[in-house]
Length: 307
Image 1 (cartoon, one colour):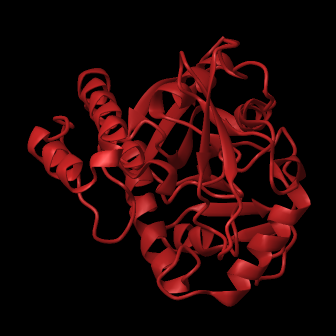
Image 2 (cartoon, rainbow, N blue to C red):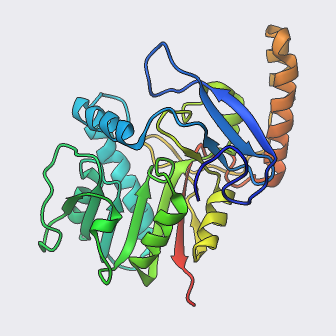
C-alpha cells in the first residue's frame, strides 16, 4: 500500500479529490500541503510528499529534545495520555501480559505500562532521550532503536500498540502484516490516529490541526477497519473518547446547526458557498457515521482473524 497520484491505495478507485491545506507542525512561512482523497472510501494521503522519511525522523528527534510545554512532546502531558491509553487496554485484557509499543518515542508509554505490571517493550526508529537496551533483558521496559523488524518472530505479544504512528509510515499495510506476525492468537493491535471523517476536520477545513507535514496518511475508523480486514484482522473495539487530558466520552453526532451556518454566512458572505458545502458534509456524517464523527482522534483495537 503505497501513496501515489493515480488511484486510491486502499480501494483502487481512480476518482480522487484534491485539497490544499495549511500544516500545523511548522512555523511560518508554511508550505502548502497537497492532499488527495478517494471519492469513494475517503482515505486521504499527502501527495507529493514534502519531507523524506529521514527528514521526518530528524524533526521528531529535535521535538522530543525540546520537550515543548503544553504540546504533544510535553513530558507531563505524555504521562497523562499514556495512563488514559492504558485504561483502554485494561478494558480489553483480563490481565497484564506482554506489550510492544511501535513508535515508542522516548519510552514514556512503556514506562507507564511497566509500572502497571506489563512486560513492556518499545521500538523507535528515531533516537530519543533514552538509550536503547538489549531486548531480552527481563524485568524492566525495553526501548529498542529500530523498527518492528528489530523484534523477530517467534517472539509474540499480547498487545501491540501504534499510538499516532500509522499516519507516518510509508506502507501502513506492510506494517500491519508485521504486527500480525508478532501478535498472539488472542492478542490485540491498538491503533490511534486522527479522524479524517470527523466534524472537526470538516469545520476547520484547510486549518485542521491534524494537517501536518509529517502526516502521510489520513484515516477514518471505516478506512482503518477496511485496511485491517485486508491484512487479517477483525473483532473491532472502538474507544468512545479521545485519550487526551480533559476529554470525556462522546455521544452520537447529531449534525450541524442551521442557525450557526446562517450566522457564519452573514458574517462571511463570500464564504457562503463553501459553508453550505461543509454543512451538507456534516449532515452526511450525522447520518453515516454518528458514533465517531465527534472524535477528532479515534482509537481502534482489533484481533487477528484465525485462519
